[in-house]
Length: 439
Ligand code: PMP
Image 1 (cartoon, rainbow, N blue to C red):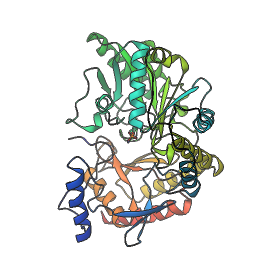
Image 2: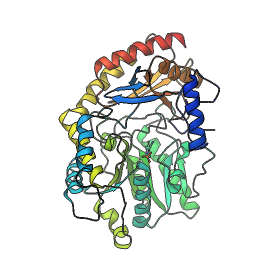
Image 3: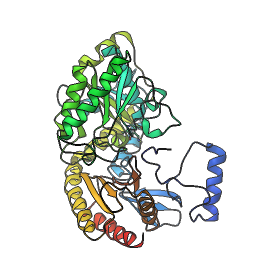
Image 4: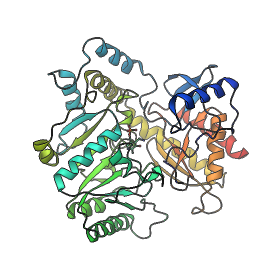
């Protein structure tokens, strides 16, 4: 079975080293939550508190969070928590009443986009944002066909799970969905942009042969679950041109790379110099509060808006908007995009230096504080999934949290909160060095 990009290191009952108390918690989870949930790590972590880049277990042990992109301005950031509490105490209702908060936030957020992307609609999750994009794209193009990368993850709704191949064979893809290889510079020959666009074109041709009209191409602009493919910058542009020429739209899924993580740019699509028709947002937008959204060019929503009405009970409610506003203000006032660039470069350099001493460290891909480190056996094209799992679990024992991703389960996915410091990087590298020596 394939992996969903984040569960490479799922807990398997009977493995690991759980205390009697935590075994009881696992049993309670299964009883109350049923069989579909998964836990991270051979020995799951039982957390009770978070602050900045640190998470704490019940015994007060600190874990360095090098993985959670949701708490991007730091766990429980006081300014964000205060904004949530302040708004919740004053007015906490939905977008069917006139109220400033959602408009203040919408305008502030849109100020971070090219002027053509001038509408935003609010949802609670990234899945809902992509689901809305799916419906809008169908209404706008009159088509139904979607192209995704072969280990993509875009969310949990029926329509979007059918476009998320990383969920594995147990979750069938739609007949209108075509998968294309990830833009992997090691495995695609020639110019990456041309090669990736040729895959998009082949998918379009195949749809047309089956009587399916293309509606869109959707990609996570850093290809997180495919193994983190950040460059070379600009390689996406020919693929976007190809889907547009076929009458489809381009949807940039910014749920993972967005909100400054890539350092140089606020959004992943900007690395490629392309202008999406729609941009889906989520995870870091509320630093843990469920707020997400879809930004779009007005022309794309015209057909949908004329026929359908949109209301999302909790999406864009006043508390969500106030919380998201506080997150954006912290990103701006604490210079977190710049921090992601500077600390991300430092992180990448540290990993490259370690790579000189550890043969299992293969190619590294990095944009700001989004890093993908291949673990290999011998040459760059030979993945070592077993060692990857030992590294992730070894780091967890050293109280440093990361995970692994990619179709071959051999890419360390390193994606810390944006407040990560150079000292935090040094802490990570020291633990990583020791774990590498052991595994
Ligand atoms: N798109 C991408 C790229 C994601 O990584 C995720 C979540 N892992 C989603 C969409 C779905 O977001 P949510 O879990 O908020 O529904």
